[in-house]
Image (cartoon, rainbow, N blue to C red; front, side):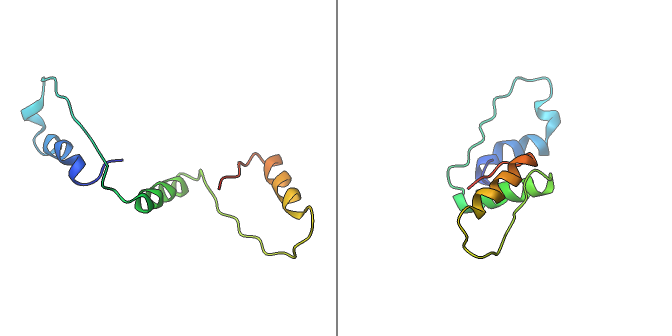
Length: 83
């Protein structure tokens, strides 16, 4: 994932592809100045679009073993738990 300024070289190539056609071109993409929360939000939205992630919010009484049961049900369904 590149920040805006880090993708300037790619923008130049996309704007004038004939200028670079048939040539060997090295392109550096960087993203050092992109905010980590912004990057995480972008990645989460893409995972949601692809149907590769889902959020589950469950409200319940605090009972011993309940979280383990929920985790087991998710695992039986082939889910991974992240976070």
